[in-house]
Image 1 (cartoon, rainbow, N blue to C red):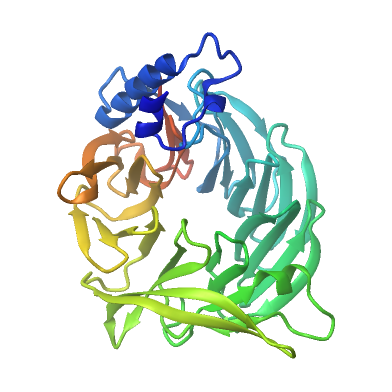
Image 2: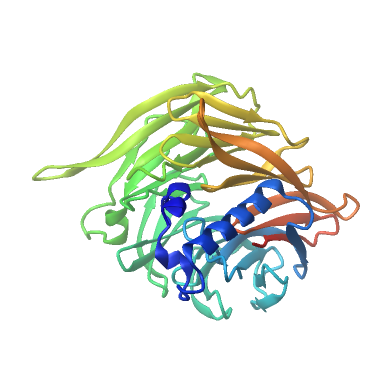
Amino acid sequence: MRMCLQRWSFCNLSVLGKEQVNHSWKTYFLRRCHLETKMTKGQSGGYTCKSLRGHTGRVVGLVYVQGNSVQQPDLWNSSATVCSASTDGTVRAWNVQNGERLWCSPVQSPLTGIVSDEQREVVITADSTGLIKTWQSQTGQELASFSTASPHCTLLQYSINNDWFVTVGTSQGSVCTLVDLTLTKKSSIVVCDTFRVNILLVSPDKKWIAAGTKDNDDLSPKVLYTESLTSPSEDEDPLCQSVPVTGCQAAVFIPTQPARLAIIHQDQHPNNRALTVFDVSIKKSKYKSEIQVQQVEFFPLTLNLWRSDILLEAKDSNHIVLAAGEQLWVYSLKGILLATFKDHTLPISSISVDSFRVVTASQDLSLRVLTWRNDRDRGLTLESQYHLLGGSHTMSRAFTHVACDYSSIVASVEGNDGKDVLKAYSFTS
């Protein structure tokens, strides 16, 4: 058991399944090592690939609704379910391992976004008319709907204690918060007037929402006190504070800190980028409460990119992963460049980061798998391992989205005929 704990510090007996007698820690250790070796090498025979067909439009997003967690994988039952949303107006659920379609929603207006809550087994979608809907992820039953009248919606789902919320960023620049699976409106606040909200994040301690737009270089992102959105007082506006940077292009909360926000933004010259890290807190006095946004780190980025989309993820308290164009960078939070990779010939369109690996999806119709490892001299570092191919260029154009659980990778492929396909790669122990 100590060997399990040394290798996976979060390991405990509950991950060994109900059959404690049959699934000893030795069996678990060997099986998990074997699976991680397959996932690290990516050799033929180490995984299966299924094509999930049925959408007649573009896939706008995909989410796991039942997955195998990196922290506590169930190595004896690796079935996973993914839901995809498309401009064909449908949500479809798929069994990742056998490629079977489990259900398909009735056709509605073209869908524009999808998020999920695995714990409640719920999928949330937005369509081009601004209609937000919740679905039961195992059956496809529609649970509720709410109209925002916004052609572009950014979705954020989170729970605080046992209360369930969806916060929606609209194309009119407002942030609207809905409560419970009934989608009852609780509050609305304008954060970037007339520009669409396309950055929307919740802090790990759930006390803060970061909201902003990438579409205007003169505007600053905002931080909002979640409690004032979810339990608003009648006579006061929700608590909101501007972050002292402009031209925000990407943002992420650091997952191991309660409320530490990293933002990539303009730095003096329009073509220069910098990354600034802020701690967010609240100062309460007898008569009022104030949000405090305090800078803790700042460093310039040498990306040399002209308005390229920037993808930003954080692994832990000290490693951030950044993709732009064909390149991938790993920085420490102090600004030390730890690694850089150029494994793709066309821009990276999506990335997935967890504690085991990073997967990049590219317009060159390939996925690149990189794995984390501890180096004796350099500490934690990322190693580039192998490509997964998405098919032929005669049929397909590019990978557009990617998502992972512990033992599988699912990505959407843009079809030349306008009908996107999902590729599901399953690794077995």
